[in-house]
Length: 103
Image 1: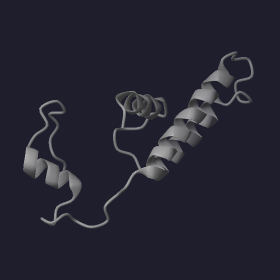
Image 2: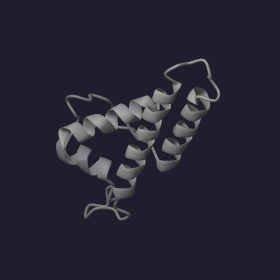
Image 3: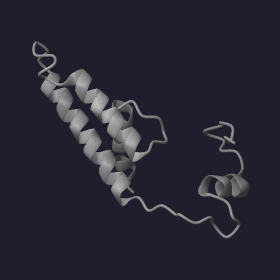
Image 4: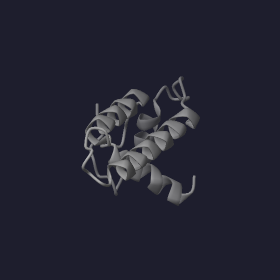
């Protein structure tokens, strides 16, 4: 995936207030919350509410399209580990992220 596509996905995620890991249900819930807070009918005097809703709708479509086309493995890898465990086992701590592996 192109770097600008990743940047767009990151902007969309942040606009909807999502963390770096989210399910389709999380995306939908965040979208519905953003719609409730920013819908032009709810804030009629706010001039840029329609533009904000356009950004929210675009962010939602982008994230849902990405999740629709993301291939997920439903089986453990050859070592019996999930993807995160496999990465940590083979590469160790991410020097950029520097977070602890969650148990």
